[in-house]
Amino acid sequence: MIATILFLAFAVLLAGGVPVAICLGLAGAFAIWLADQSIMAMPTNVYAGIAKYPLIAIPMFVLVGSVFDRTGVALRLVRFATALVGAGRGALASVAVLVAMVIGGISGSGPATSAAVGQVVTKSMAEDGYPRPFIASTVGAAAATDILIPPSIAFIVYAVLVPGVSVPAIFAAGMIPGILAGLCIIAAVVIISILKDFGGKARKQEAIAVWQSFKDAFWGLMAPVVILGGMRLGFFTPTEAAVVAVFYGLFIGFFVYHSLKLRDVYEMLVEAGEISAVILIVIALATVFAWSTSTLGIVRPIVEWVVGLGLGSAGTLALLTIFLIIVGMFLDGISIFLILLPLLLPIAAAFQWDLTWFGVVLTMMIAIGQFTPPMAVNLMVSCRIAGVSMESTVPWVIWLVLAMLLSAVAVMTVPDLALWLPRVMGLG
Image 1 (tube, rainbow, N blue to C red):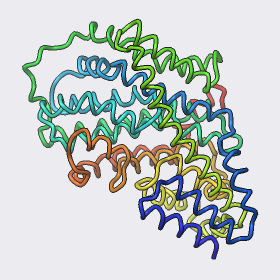
Image 2 (cartoon, one colour):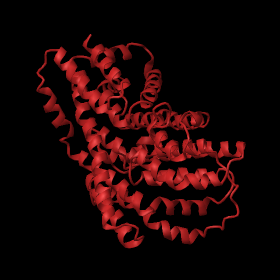
Image 3 (cartoon, rainbow, N blue to C red):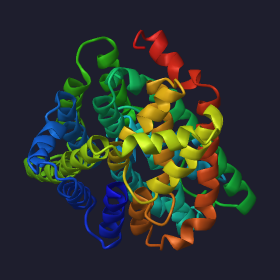
Image 4 (cartoon, rainbow, N blue to C red):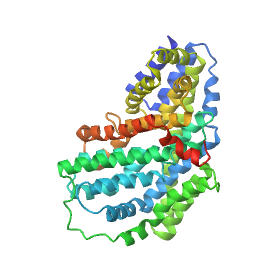
């Protein structure tokens, strides 16, 4: 009964337009009160939820995204990728995906990447003959790879919540699946562009020299190398890597590209502070919700029911895939992890799934939800920039969802796509 009330209260509040964090906190507090538990469990869990050292990396990586957004890195990456790929049908769409993947290796936030890439490529893609709904779909889908390609805020939260999974290990595990997802999206947009004759209309523009554009983009291309290479060589932890990335971005902005001013630093700090506060408030209040589900005995009956369906490992994974994609349409990845991991981890234990691999699979499902209407966060951003409604993107988004789902099925079928790199690096 209490379990029903807990999830029903959350759903009603969410449907009423109440912010996710408040929904989680109020529903959890209501369940605690109904169960005659001490209400002092709330402040204790709120503090325990965010008093974790690895979470310090979240504000820093958010700040990294703000810094690199203002330095003009995205524009230079687009010029370099365009010089490599050239003109033609599907070329500029492929560039948008490639640039989003590189930006994802810097910021780790899908909506932030959707904004950064969308602002740079939307106008040029429209001039090159791409319909604006298709542009928004491509950018939104490409930005979804960012929670797979390290550094990823979602991976950090998962590693904090799951015992035995380290941040470096799941960062490494997400690399190949993230690249695979990006390649599947590129294949889809190229095929659509060829069939529909999208792109290749603005051929009058002067060809961009590959070497010159590479020199301009070099410092941006080196950012993921600095972040991930430093962690791999043991120079710094993931949390320290975020700080290094901030100073690297400031160095580029002030001394290399000369695109930043002191006024920009203040604005970036305010922006990063606001975004980080929202994320950490969600984490803090979601901890109350998660504590309610576990302490009030809600988890065990649900887990026993799922395992008792007799679907086996593959069938249960397929069921979770459908469920997570649907949930991902309405909630962000961090909220999903905090709400559902108490339910999902016992299921993973029952089937003896590797928890690092399981984290990558869950994140791929959440990534698909991020650009699947009606509440797709990445798509909301790209649609606003492109000036189109989300409904108009559905004919294109559905093919990109299928493309990314294909990559997810490959990772489910061949776990070594996620586990090989951590094993080779000695991380798992």
